[in-house]
Image 1 (cartoon, helix red, strand yellow):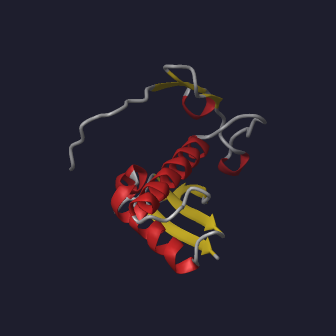
Image 2 (cartoon, rainbow, N blue to C red):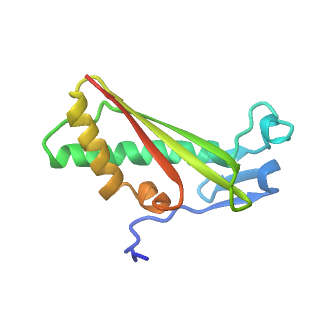
Length: 145
């Protein structure tokens, strides 16, 4: 396992699990939670799931990693849109697992260039990609010009 030198730490607390509330210590992120109907829960309107929060974080982080790689290669990837689909379901080995599909779109960059930037961001830079590697199926769907 790699060690890091922390530059920033975010702290959040959840009470009530998937049918509760989560909030960051600085009160910037707040979400009421409920289990979606597809998983046998009430699916209360206006509530989130941990998968929503993970998808939002991964999409934002990957976008930052893509921009970072672009700048290193003197290419502008700042206009890229990253959408993360995070799915949850039963694992073959028991319990539950996640799968992620990252959709990366930027019509200002040629397809091959954007695909190369996205692959490098995924393999070398994005902390979410590092955290999920060899544990979560993460697929890239890249659409450039």
